[in-house]
Image (cartoon, rainbow, N blue to C red; front, top):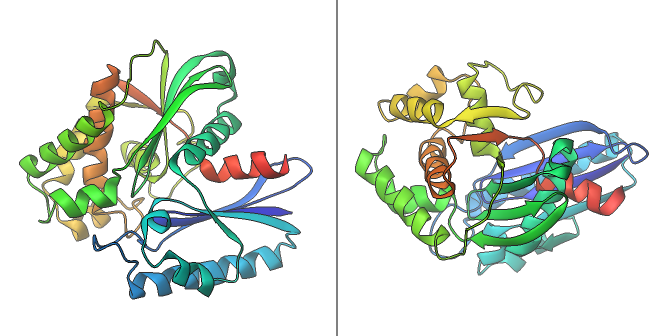
Length: 294
């Protein structure tokens, strides 16, 4: 068995796979919110959460007899002034990667999950807590990629200080993201808009009225603009606790960022002129498995 760990701004995720077949046997995601706060430092409370999660993952890797692993950290660790303090407290060999490497690995993960894209023109986006990576792809080749240094945690803390956020708060957050996205050249003729990571897959699960998350049902799910707008209009009438009750599939710790996340997805669809996004569980995590072990 082999394993991969993705230490993100909001979540820390683990995948364990059979090295002979590259088939996943376990996927886990836990929220640590390492990117909380805007002073440039990881907060001690969140560091301790992250260390606890990583210790739990280490024990799982031992119980599955994993012979090797690859662990990476993204935006929150990359930008933290005290990242070395955190990395030195873990018992893992962790590579801090940049946004372009994130996009590269995310594209590998998407193709791992959605084989039909290997002969299509498509755009993928990996909307995380601290950044959003975009991949413009022709078949299996990345034509261009870039990272927008805004994610759902950053936008929540910057624009949405009330619970629930106002429509103006959300409009401003979406506009800020769109402005950053349009600093890049986005002209590209393509067929499929593909979204991965927790915000997009959570919206798919909510639209499906799932009580518990189902990877199969949320794979290649057609999430329409109308569906996202409906969910957003519901969510802005609820506080965080009410959202957790109303959407049982929503992971605790995502009930605040999901609102601004929905707004960002709508902004992305508007920029690219698409009325739907196809969701996938294939992500950086699966990309790590493919790139390093398969």
